Length: 188
Image 1 (spheres, rainbow, N blue to C red):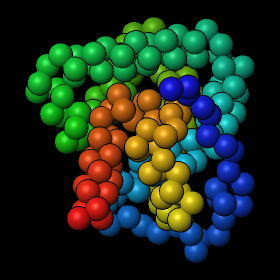
Image 2: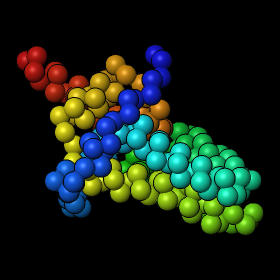
Image 3: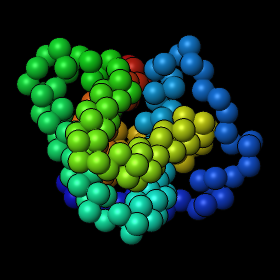
């Protein structure tokens, strides 16, 4: 199946007034995780544009450190994903604690980048865009179009770059299983 970039959502949908934002229920981690995953899939192109602007500014100011930081983060992420596929304990950690898994990747990247002296580039060029994406995805309420798009991604009708990343973090399997259970119950 071809990988397609999701459409750019209208900016008034992406960042409207406070009526479409709400604090997540921190006691229900699975519901919060579902909200984050849904918003990451739905607004992925908007997140990409915002991150690209921030990375471009930092990359313009310090191109070598930005390239070095990006390469280190990608290599560390790929290393952790590979290790999680080959070690059961890491696979369980990645599945149960995806935020902790991403934090471990970021901390490992930070320590490697600090050896080369590019810590501020890491903070502003890599960590800040990821943090802003996570905050927006956590606070943004989902709408009907958001839920429909995510179901299409979840059952494999569409494949997007964010879907591939979330698959690597094993964050979409639960949605697929829930949807399959729903369909089987509806048939009965």
